[in-house]
Length: 293
Image (cartoon, rainbow, N blue to C red):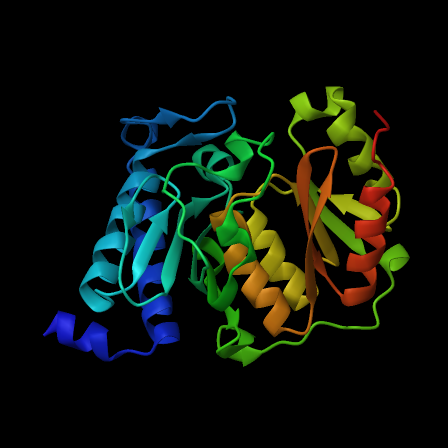
């Protein structure tokens, strides 16, 4: 009966159900204590980039739920879950976005999901931020987002939006202010400390960071992007963003009337989202950070 009920749900209803279940599961594992959370922890390069038992359990729950309810759809998960289907549609999973925050006890983390129409499905487990020298971004990052979903469990906030559904938070329609001026907006961003020593990243980042009224570095891109759509944050930019950190929020921002861009500078792809004017300004500033060879 549960399988039949899930199959009958719309994509947005299914996403909402799965996101709430997976986030609750992750939160319950964290509540069991640090030992349970770090059991089987996987380090993915930098010390701040890792996966906990909660990430793995939440992704497994989402994967199984999607395989049951949408058997013909493809699936790509941050932690390696993958399935190639026949429908042409692909679900992209971020079981815990903001894992460092999550493991530290912060409430600023979320579970995120996107349903996209990709030209090509990349293998799971090869995020763009692990390979920033790549000559091309992951093709998933340019896919049409039919539906993006972000659920912040500890604030009980669910954002949905995409080409098939208007952007909402907890069912209430939200629209981004298209007339916003960059000089009056906050900018959410992230750059790992190691990149500040590398001019190819630091120079364009600083050029962009000088333009908004203030900066916020909160550590969970999907939470940030959802709040850009809602107006709590003004604009967002970051380099080398993997599909699962980009697509859910991209769909939500665009469906709220915002703009998104991917700008290549010094061999790195910068991802920008917000009102159309500020996105264009930030994109231009980033391009101004190109280093002559």
